[in-house]
Image (cartoon, helix red, strand yellow):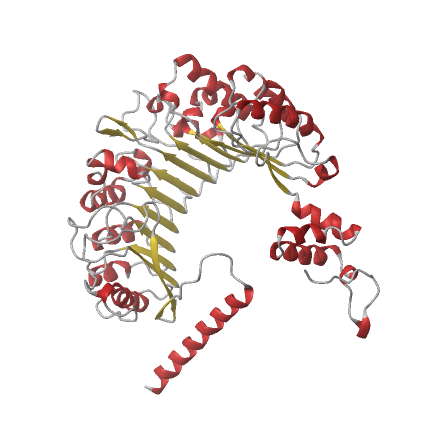
Amino acid sequence: MMNLQTSSDPGPNGTLSLLALDDDILSLITLLLLVRERSHNRVSISLVCKRLRAISLTFLFRVVRWPREGRIEFYPRGLWKYMRHLYYLQVQWRSHHLRSLETLSDVLPHLQNLTTFSYSDQKFGPTLKFIESLTRSPLANFELSTTFFSHKALTYFTKFSGIQRLIVKQQGVALAIAPESKQSLSLQCAANLIFACYETLSHIELPGEFFSFQAFVSRHVKMSALKTLILHSYPPLNAQEHPIWKISPTFPVLSKLEILYKLRVTGAHPSRYALMPTDLPPGQKELCIFPPLLDTLSIANPMMEDRIFLHLPPFLTNLNLDFIPEWENMLSSKDILAYHKPERMRSFLNHMKWKAHGSLPNLKVLCIKMGWCATPDIIMCIGRLFPDLAYLEFQGLRYVDRTEEPHPDMDGSVSSLASLQSLQTLKLAVELPEDPYEYSAAAERDVGSVEQAASKWAEALALQLPQLRLLAFERRPHIGRSLGPRVLLGHSDWTWFDINKGIAQKQVPLPDGPLEWDLIQKRRAEAETRYRHHLQNMENR
């Protein structure tokens, strides 16, 4: 480790010593040293002097994960004041679990600076004493798994207060197969926790099965601080009886809504959740009332017949549609992919255009994840619907084979995209033609390869879209149109281009892992040099 000059007096030749710096600069330097040094040197930094000890311990014990390696003894009391985020880890044996909770129950009330607590145990639930101690902690962020909802602690969840960010992760089997009495108690536990902090909660992530619509309808409580609501896993029990749009007035300042439900597949028949069903009860108003500040809407496994697409929020700027978020569900039924074939996707977009009540929102960001390539017809429909898009993304090339799809139409796609004159970032899923001998040839060869096709597309798009700055093509390495190695499921592979003044230049892939600042600067300087040389060559011509 480097030698530190700790005197506050100026050094030789008028140099400034380390401890003569103010707290902000010294904290930044200490943080950089802690990141770069090995673990034993990190402790050595805290032994230099009292001032460096206080600063380094703040960084070293700001985030604590406990218990580690079967040790259930907690940290010394002198370190408690530095702890801000505490993550409780899963232990292997129940006896260790109970002992660690007993220890933590005594410690939690004394962690006065604690703001975040995470309970990630997947096997064992909490004790009543432990839950009671948490209610007396000044938590702002609370992360837990569904195993935390102990039915014996039903009333304890009403004692929480001040939580601003609540994240609940699904663990174990779906709640739908549990007995009805346990379903009711689990819903009540989650509802008690939410309504205990309804005045302060600004962010909620919750499995849909634990979101009690009946509780919101019956209590008539307005969550005046809630800005983000994310519902995931499986949809609520009896979901069609309680569509979420009915309780939207409960969230007056909601700006981000994500409905990321999985498909419920019974036999070979998948059922999708509708935010606004087509079969409303008699006398029910059709007008959907949205929070006035809602600007981001994300839906997984959307139902194309959902009337929400005919009543989109007027101030919506971001729309994300994920038609195939679960790979295993795709394999369980053939009609998962057939549900949103390009022909039906085109019909869906046209229906939205001609049947939407009132004016469509002025979208700036649109992302569609599907199992098919983007076609000129689909792109043209999107341009008619949302002509002012600044960000457009298609995904889906990594799924199944492409035997049912035609070869890509570059001229048609470029012509369709030309109507989006405000587009700044474009990500396309298109099956680019490949050279079947590419992998046996030299690594530098790109004639007839995906790289050459991508460059050709990029050059054409750069000339047609004056505002375009970033362009990417989703690709998968293989030989031919349906053979060869595939990318990992769930991970997309993109080829990026920088667009500047109508000129497309492929980005140099950066290595994985953290980058040194000088490497970033070097890459940036190289890119600027190449661009200047390109301009000089164009002028010489």
